[in-house]
Image 1 (spheres, rainbow, N blue to C red):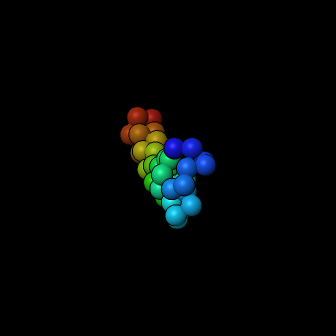
Image 2 (image 1 turned 90 degrees about the vertical axis):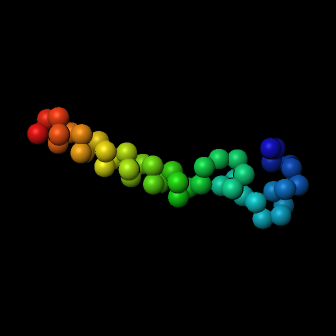
Length: 45
């Protein structure tokens, strides 16, 4: 969808139309960080 598409004018933002929302990306980054720490503790002790 292009930026000139009229659907952008009815309350749809980039977060809901074109890509993952900021909340989802934040959750993935936090989960990834936790996973790295856990694996580090398990593998390197």
